[in-house]
Amino acid sequence: MKKVGIVMGSDSDLPIIKKATAVLSELGIPYTVNIYSAHRTPNEAREFSLNARKNGYGAIIAAAGMAAHLAGAIAANTTLPVIGIPCASAFLDGMDALLSTVQMPSGIPVATVAINGGANAALLAAQIIAVEDTVLADKLDNMRVSAAETVLKKDADIMSKL
Ligand code: RP5
Image (cartoon, rainbow, N blue to C red; front, side, top):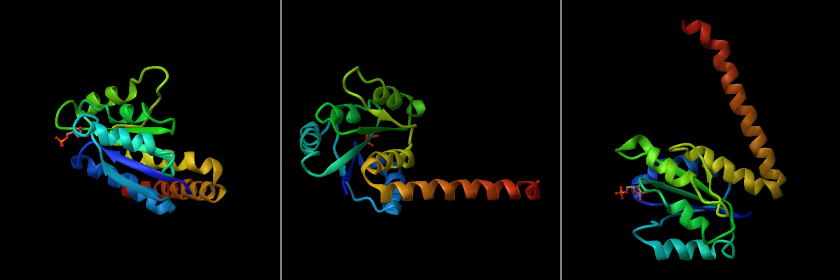
């Protein structure tokens, strides 16, 4: 199975990355996690991206906050699908990172999830890998059924809480 490469701009983004790794672990998808910054360690970010396809990755998740250029910088050097997570920081509630991540120029796409959307980033990466993997696709279907059952149970219980 192809790996998911997770990169984050700083270890301060780790709580959001943990939401992604929990989903990938539950689905049995191999992943790596690295701290590469578009600004502080641009050479390492570039090397990772340039070599990602030949190193067995099928999708890359890039999380960054503030002037969040990491997902775009990674996408500039690979045609693997890149999923950007805009991370909220102390100021601007993540709007800065959201706009920096989502507003990519035509030709270099980044699939941007919600601010702090670590779980959806992992699910989207899994869905990309599941295009060629029916066992993984079945796991994703089962996860959806189970999530729906959780909501239906809450619906059945809600009147008793009022
Ligand atoms: C970004 O700047 C990182 O992704 C992080 O979200 C933000 C702040 O980084 P630190 O100053 O906490 O290292 O590059």
